[in-house]
Amino acid sequence: MNILVCISKAPDTTSKIAFKDGNTKFDETGVQYIVNPYDEWYALVRALELKESNGGNVTIITVGTAADEAVIRKALAIGADDAVRIDVNPVDAFEVASQIASYAKENNYDLILTGKETIDFNGSQVGSMIAESLDLPYVALASKLDLNGQTLRLEQEISGGIQVLEVNYPAVVSCAKGMAEQRIPNMRGIMAARTKPLKVVPAYASETYTSFESFSLPEAKKAVKLIDPNNMDELVSLLHNEAKVI
Amino acid sequence: MSILVYISGEHAGAKASHEAVTYAKKLGSDVVVVASGNSSDLADLGTYGASKVLVDANVSDADSRQITALVAKAVEATGADTIIFSHDLISKAVAPRLSVRLKAGLVSGAVALPEGDKIKVNVFSGKAFGYVTVKTAKKIIALLPNSISPEATGSACPVENFDAGTGNAAVKVVDKKIPEGEVPLPEAEVVVSAGRGLKGPENWGMVEELAKLLGAATACSRPVADIGWRPHHEHVGQTGLAIRPNLYIAIGISGAIQHLAGVNGSKTIVVINTDPEAPFFKAADYGVVGDAFEVVPKLIEAVKKFKG
Ligand SMILES: Cc1cc2nc3c(=O)[nH]c(=O)nc-3n(C[C@H](O)[C@H](O)[C@H](O)COP(=O)(O)OP(=O)(O)OC[C@H]3O[C@@H](n4cnc5c(N)ncnc54)[C@H](O)[C@@H]3O)c2cc1C
Ligand SMILES: Nc1ncnc2c1ncn2[C@@H]1O[C@H](COP(=O)(O)O)[C@@H](O)[C@H]1O
Image (cartoon, rainbow over the protein chains, first blue to last red):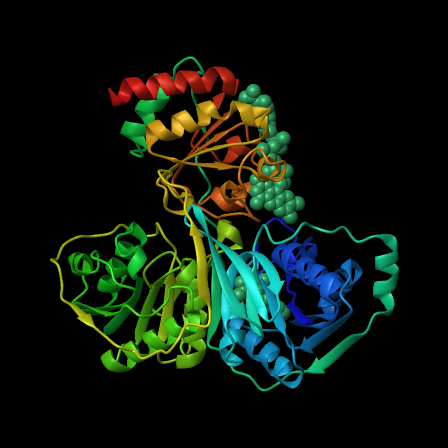
């Protein structure tokens, strides 16, 4: 089974969020980039497990600039066979999806996996857009993915419960918590990653539909109001009369 | 301006659906709802501003291609230039597909009505806002639940059958397990959540009791789900569920940045923790420095007294 895993870079989850140039750009000062956790922990690791039990190949793909290669090497160290970088600094999810779909059209994949969302822009758009561009079925936020012949058996968390789905592949699936356990790359993986193939593909023609014009930070929280642990009546009264939430 | 709102029949009675229709009504005078799957709650969407509901009961909520075809057909039939979704599991599968199909820019995670040509969205897991513009003639907005209040000012509207002829579903639902009686976490207005400070799964009785009294859902921090003290679907945060309830009560949770990422959209946060230095207090509206095993039973008593 040949699997394409879409990998995005994301600021380390502990990064300080700040903006520059009149709040029009994310301030990268001191920010470490990591593989977007959903892409790494769930999509990539599940792809590797499927390859380990069924054979095949796991290719990772990133739409990004040369600066993203450190993050790509990290995903290779976890165990992907090879990597593709499409040389575009993307403006929106549609541009990312068009680039990946164009590449996927030229190379046949049984399964295309993405993460649930990127942790910076939280769009949850790219996978579904790839699926539409390739006219494939799409399942969002799968928490389990198993293979049964030509059929994928998937689970999704729906409000409070679980839904089990079946769909034939080829298909596109976005991966959420539950699908796999995080893998920490070992020394051998890190060494091997240095020499694994990383193909750079020039940009395909594509459009953009949306753009981020500016950003803002939420208003600072007022200082916490401390309540005597022996006076829970006061807390209940504040929640009722002041916050009006109960 | 003609606005179309997609609603899943199954969720027609949910608050998030009422919010989406209210949002649409504030955007334009003529609001039509297109729904997949029938439900007796559909006519009631008129109360929130819909002039009519077009429904195709043969479309499966699990098949994004079928729903996309249905909504595209309704866009054609109504001439809508703006399509509204509630940013939930179904819309995450459908709205981006529709964006490609209609060449309509998609703004996902909107938290407010457009200001001029800019739409405010949640980014960095609630740690910041972005302002997005759309270049295409048609646009799609996926509204984050709990961003505006539903306004019931109208009356029930007609529900018409709308056969989109979308064929068979490629994605089949083979099983559905929904535990009964529990409040689903993503829709809960009040959430009681606990972390490793509770020491073991046997101590969750008081958390559940408090939640029950408040009509709340229960949630937990990631390590608690990872060690199996609580089910995975309760895990909130960066890698779990992002929720935006009116009230979030955090018991024995340190307030790591990855946890906050899933809950800092909550309107009011109460933190109960033994450690006055716990980072969660910085994000809290009300704090109680104390031992959960003493404080929570007292809180339960106080709530009982309040509820009479
Ligand atoms: C990439 C990444 C993603 C992550 N994603 C998530 C996520 O989605 N969600 C998430 O929750 N975490 C996530 N984490 C983990 C996160 O960093 C923290 O480790 C985790 O949230 C801590 O859980 P906790 O607060 O329950 O436990 P602890 O950090 O152990 O805190 C326990 C708290 O309980 C208090 N306490 C102890 N005893 C009592 C008592 N008797 N009464 C009251 N209080 C008491 C302590 O003072 C302490 O503050 C992620 C980490 C990484 C690196
Ligand atoms: N620049 C990118 N290159 C490759 N894959 C991406 C890129 N951006 C997003 N993705 C994939 O699409 C998923 C959803 O991203 P988003 O729609 O931005 O939330 C991510 O989890 C990645 O798997």
